Every structure is written in C-alpha cells, then in structure tokens.
Length: 154
Image (cartoon, rainbow, N blue to C red):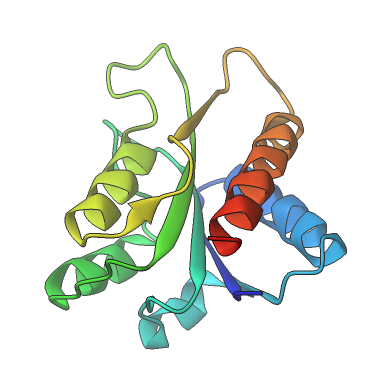
C-alpha cells in the first residue's frame, strides 16, 4: 500500500484538526501515513510513489495561510512533473466571501498543473454551514479510500 503524505495549511486550527482526524482514520484503515507539520514542509517535495492529501483553510481574499505559503511556492518553483502522484484536496472556507475555498482551489490547480492525478474532486467545506468540518471530511475520506483501493487494483 502506498504511503499517504498529509499536508495542511491553517490559520486558527480548523484545518489542522481536520487533517489530524483524517490521519487517525488513515491509520485505522492501515495506511502508512505522515502528517507533515508546517514547520517540517521545507524539506518535503511530493513524489510519484505516494498519495498526497491536502487540507487547507482560506484566509484574506482567497489566500493560502502563511504557514503553508512558502511550501506552495517551493513546490511551484521546483519544476516537478508528477504524472503518477495521486492527490486530493479538502478546502475550508466561508461562502459569504467571493473567493470561497480559494486556497484549496489554488492547491488543486497547482497539482493538476504538475500532472498529478486527482483521486476525488476538491471537497469544499463551508464554515457558514458546519461547525465541525471533520464530520464532512470523514465521509469524503471513505470515498477517497474506495477510489484509492480501486486504483491500486489496476
């Protein structure tokens, strides 16, 4: 089974809690998983050999949080081509803003540009509709697991 790298960007901690919840579930499902803390990301570039799950809140006018922004720019500038990397993104945002889940959209677009394969469409979690985003992310992870399992069988 491929390793899962779980990366998050957060301002107030919600995205981190969602990532930790997903990480616990991944462990329960038997995945080898690494939850990357923002201060560890400087030494991490994704590879084709692993899965990548990204959980990110949105700040400002659709911006990435400061704790993931340097990594985003590093990946963007690295000239990577990742045609075998399987990835998925969970975006947290507030639909009362024009750029709802803008950070998640930016991450999704970046990895699509790098040639990576999207396992599931971007999950957008709206703070206007839920106080517990991890409860929306868990059923999504079940779908991700089913898709990843089916993909591994091919």
